[in-house]
Image (tube, rainbow, N blue to C red):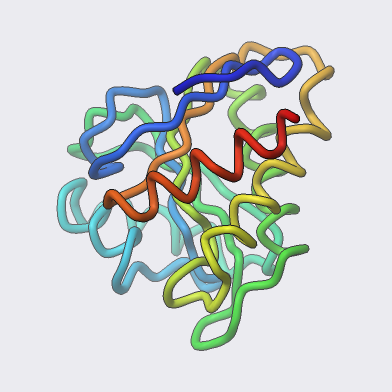
Length: 175
């Protein structure tokens, strides 16, 4: 499924975000930037510890901020770490939205054309997939008229349930 929002083509795909062949994958990070479980753990496991080391050297950051690192051994050239929550804390709609806003600006500033985005703040972060995606879509809408090279945003659901929920949210937002 795909949909246009301003300059962006929004695609929804199911799968393991570490396998996507995009310019950058988004990491659902904590503000200290250490990579434990969930999306961060999968990125670190497949991409290598150097991603975590490079991220932590730039931190800590505040919830709502983002930083960019290399992609290590991933297919993606970069990882953009979006801090949706403090370590051990809960994600908020505002922190997820602001971190995604920063991620879009970082992607544009680094000349990136495509990013893959998980449900930042869902799961361990405490938000529902719906809440996380609403925050992400709010940031996308705020940046859809700005000029930059970022053109494709792939919203990734790891499993069938997450994929179906994301499809419903994106379809509803386009009505």
